[in-house]
Image (tube, rainbow, N blue to C red; front, top):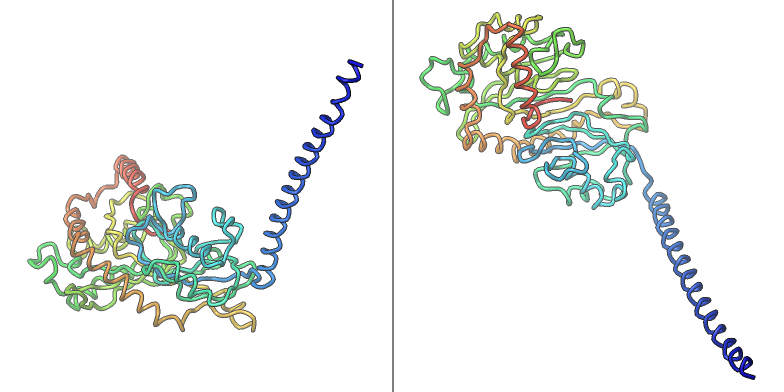
Length: 398
């Protein structure tokens, strides 16, 4: 009887335990089922988004003022230096053009920039290619999430294999500078009151024209020797336009078109011409600069450098008139490009020059360069100095 009394109550207790266990299993099952439904729902939502707005390869025409940004290209995982692409990717996500989970790896969207502008360098005609969801009012929505000094000015469909960097035939840069940069070193008027005369402008253009053609530009960048094949670059056009007054300062714009450019190449090309025009270096240094010997070439400030436009002549000939794709010439956007430059790029250049005197300060350093330096020892020293400065200095590169 005692044994029966002890065993008797165990049955109900065991039953209650099984009930609780069954209840827990049911709750877990329901939770898993719910999570499964959530995952399935997200997948369905994304598939629905793809049906409504299929991903298509496009190019975006961008304009931006580079002041305050550490260049165009993103440094994923580093928030220390803000870049133009950081702003762009964030705007693409917020506007619903790309999935949020692709923002950290834009290769999933086949993202590619045409040119990699560096610290402080602006652009009026940068082009990036990527796959996006073609939502309604796409440009307006992207721009609504961008600061006013970065704008999307155009969007066009391109072929699925289009790559903005590899498909680019040439790039045109401009360099806006105060004309007192061309005042001879013995001239009384060295700054704002100087006015560029026709004779000096012609001399500037004669020197700039010498760059046209293929030359070995190893002296115009860092860490490239005279026998490095990649130091040879083809320049199609280079000239200085007539001066104009803006913001109380006389400015001139130098335009250069080439297949591609190396780090700091354009700034050194312009720096050398200024050194010759001002009387610090002889004209013969131009020919010597693309020889095998080392030439000490001054690097003009980065402030005035602007990526004006990128060229796709081969692509346009093949696909521009195929009835499916548009020609990438941006003629219709020209008015908006000019308006952006006048509102955001030129004022920034002028204001910064007046406040920081970057050109005037740089001109003061021209006399300390050794324009006759050709020794191997000087070559090594200069390369080390430029390599150390390259990490935090602006420049031009593709």
